[in-house]
Image (cartoon, rainbow over all chains, first blue to last red; front, side, top):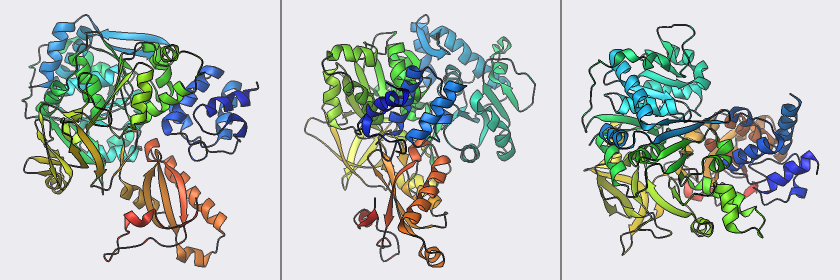
Length: 78
Length: 515
């Protein structure tokens, strides 16, 4: 499973949208039905799954799946 | 009864038991009751030595051992603690420091950069202590690390004790209109609330504290109640790690707002159904969790049933900052699903036109410097809760509506729709706006400004994109719980009363153009 699909599988655990139907322009709160805490908890899992460290402050501006994927990639490159 | 007496009794009884545990990087650090109280005494005595008596002192930071020790140093001495929400914008925090007349401030290291703004804009503020035990690099008259208060030489300072009717803390809570209100709670208010919540647990019981520490429910029921029982309080370092930290600390008891139960349940439900529930519970909860106390907002009974399948009793309670905060609670011995439990033994309940009124030793002294709001809420010793409800034949309290226009989100945060509407109205494209709370988030129903659209015509898509930009801009400046997560574009203006006020009850009924 590639990274993006693994990422979407994790999203699907908090959403009624199936992993294969999740598109990168979807917004976590508005389109995927995440609560503010679902989002935090999901990102906590991203830390463990992809071995990166996130700061609460830097994730607050993330609205879409694409923005979260970009942040993950930038942390992996750093 | 004094908070200090509650704490000192525990320190005497449970001196060698671990009082606090927290994570530093990936290492678990801890302090016993005796070690914790040594620090509290040092901070308390140093404040006295620096002539901080009967002063209001604010605290800004997320949960930490030093935060709670500073808080306890204030309320076990003769000062008044003013815990503020670390997630608020710096200008709003400065306003609250001024409104509470705070002369000192404990500030977390992460927010240390706020110090200059506070000193410039808060004239009464004379000292800021940064919550780190590292020695201060540069000595300044107005900003120092808290290590300055933890020297050994202050033991001989006269130790001032408060009296039960003295103010212990001011906790800010959202008002229905206008600015937030500073709830004044006395020593007796808080100490009797701790004593009146009835549940027993063995010394060393592990509690994981996940609620924001500036909230009355967290301060009084996680920390003070926990300490009164000799519990070990574990600090959740970030909401990013709440679920993971349940496996790390393996709590037996937790306090949660409904939003947290909803998120944890999603993790339980996402597990492979062929795995026995006991194993799933072990993985998600750490294996020892038996009780979750919940409050702050209504919890769907569904979660009580579902968590019971995983061996966890969910006990719902009811309270508000104005009541220090617990009014009623289900307990392990007496509970009824769907109710918010029986009123505490120090609480009297009555009803006026269906509204729940509360009287008793935990009812606040009033709102700080807000006489009108105080007299509207406290009448003849009865606190008007703004909630409608009833007592059943067995004495359990139920809630079935609200009197005041306040949105209660499932994370327990009270949001004043009018405060947000005023902020959004500042955007030129926003003509009329009504905020409602739906599905765990806030919805903005907006009728665009017609004058602007006449001058510069826009398509519907352009209007929606323009309004979304306004919302995104607003969201960026606000803590997560005040974010607007849904926009509805209105085709027609809102219906108004004869006094030209928008009729909120009708705001949701008009056909939207799109959702």
